[in-house]
Length: 146
Image (spheres, rainbow, N blue to C red):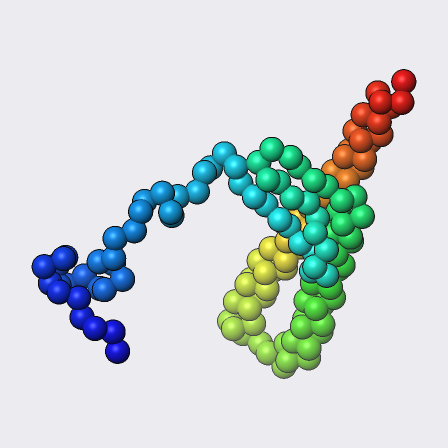
């Protein structure tokens, strides 16, 4: 158990941690120098931004795009498997409950399809960004070769 601090330093109703004095600069982050490290699910580093430089690994971008595509396809397969199991129960259902379920299921299907389509678009954009980075890199290399 921690010893209680004297009440003269700060109000007694504040928790002990809130009463500790901390320099304000210790908890501030500079918004102009973000550090971003995006990793694929295999742990490969996709790129890094230290504020002054952007580092891109083309193979990691391609791996990330493939992983996103795989996950989108797995999502569709999982949803199809769940619906296949539900269909057998729906055969014996009738009435207002079935109609309500059908309405909700159609909305769910629309949102699931939208999610899968967005994942595919993201994967394509990541793949395209890899192509753009490598094309820019090749053009920049030509300037040094002349």
